[in-house]
Length: 249
Image (tube, rainbow, N blue to C red):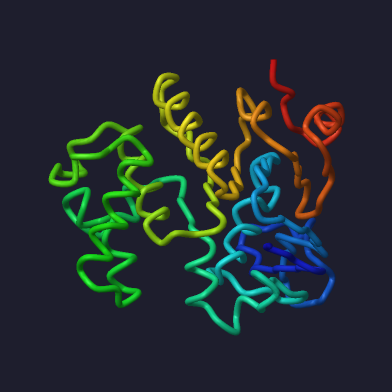
């Protein structure tokens, strides 16, 4: 389980800030998240939505210690993230909006192998994880291909495979459909549904709710750094217009 309690995160206001969002501490600090308490059980498919600037990306970057709270706590399986970053980053796999910015190797297999290699696994174990992860995203047999020659949808699948190779309990994807055409979007979503059916928790961060609510167990919407909506998608969708999120057709 991933759990946040009273999570607050602030950042320095820029020189052009008008101060409207100053949190009042006198230091010119803007609250990106304010008192966010959230539980994400194992096995859940959670869609995290919100308008641009609502705090979605900031929130999920706390799940594996990429950001540190100013107030409150973040735990994974009951352990504070800051107490064991390796465990948190093993349990919580992260796929970013621009996967090409996160690739560390030229070829598919080498990139997917990077995480398991850094866990100190032997070669046979690393190879087994790479093979299984690529098969899970229908990239089996393509480990020798250059990443820069893949389509956007294929690169997204490689990024997902890299996270899966760490065998995480939770897979967090931050705007994974950005820049993808409709066939690629449908393909990535189908793979996420399959992973969820096989027991992986999925946290899908998106501002575009087309097609993503059907597989979801829950919809959480952030507004101005706070949880504004939290519930089953069929019920939560009724409140979207009040928090600046477009209701899907």
